[in-house]
Image (cartoon, rainbow, N blue to C red; front, side, top):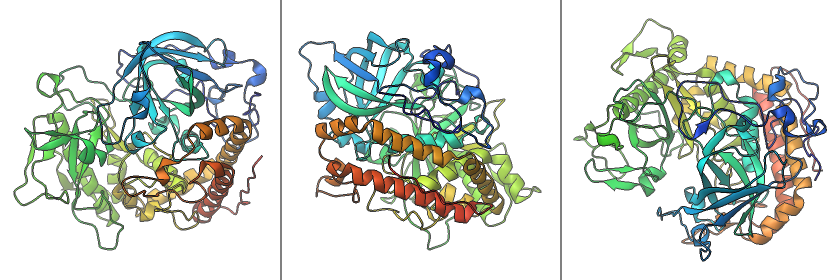
Length: 569
């Protein structure tokens, strides 16, 4: 197969990106190896490199991508000769006892310098709702850190993931979302987005489908960059990364001592009370003000007894998650207590700013009066460049779960940290871009973030100075032709990998998201329900994405622009 990305624009970020590392920060982990192999310039012959198109964007040569000519093949072979694939077929959303199967990995049908064989590791099912689909996602864990197809400039890590895009019959929403994120985020924004490439996956020589090889979302040097505390460190001056996680309530395990739940993977959680309550009429949801919402830690908490994670929580809540009159804050972890109290205080700062009232936070996480202006208090407490990135990514792609799960934030409270809350880790795009029939599907309806049940983005939408920053960034990425590059990428993918798409649909002929138990619930809209209609789904995806660009141009563009009107190849 020829190099399908030869004509992408300079800002385009295709399926495999080399030489675009995240900004450096302190700390390291044993499964992260910063050295790279090979350099982007030597990964493929010069004729295979992406040639930049004319653009007003200023992009350094190190950010230009080099991509695979053909679809790489990733094979996993079980160690035990009599082992079967039950681990990959029988896992469910509610069953968290997902075994990790030992075996060896091999990678072929790619540049010889990136191929390997007989690399030991393990494979297990990953995900929340998607763990219940027939085609499941997986987490890879090598016994020793290993590079994968030059992703992240060839850095070595133990953990990687395979995303299935099982509810998307076009098999491209992960690519669309991460392409968008990588094109919007700049190094100085301190937002991490995974690099990615499509691969053909085999289990014990049995074809398993078209997947996206992505990086594990984790706090490590070269991935989410935050200071890493040593084991059993008890100070609160560390880095924190956490996810809004409704699943921690519905699928976590009960901790009898604190009467709270741990995250589905056993990670520590904390719960935040959003107060004061917002005005009536705002869309409701798990992030609605006045409720207590659970966040699951992505970064390490190290001050539990003997290194065990202990949660901070409100000890008593009613069945709506709201504290009763006798509720008290309890925690055996100063770190979790700190980040919980800081997030609650940050919410109050942002809420007051939306009402044109300036409030600040003191060293005790108390909200206090200040002589600063509203804009100055927001700039002091929030990384606005990161939030602008998140605002545009989510306003364009319209994620249904934005106020429910897969919404990440970070806070660097280390001695050298900026001590600002930032949007981080864009993730989970398979329901986005109007794939769902029970959520926003009108590409030309509204900005979404100004009408979302995600409290953070909703409040930011009320700040004029912030919206002006959004408009400035939007015009930058439009001038750089980000979306034109994205359309070129996805239409070329559909054309060149059509045979692989058909092969995947033959293996997995039913979109399980259109037939959900217990009552055969259907959350997928036409034409995405039936994999047999994938060509119609491709055309609809392209049309919706183009309409969304043109609509947001009417809201945010500083000049009249020619409408984007991409076509299938």
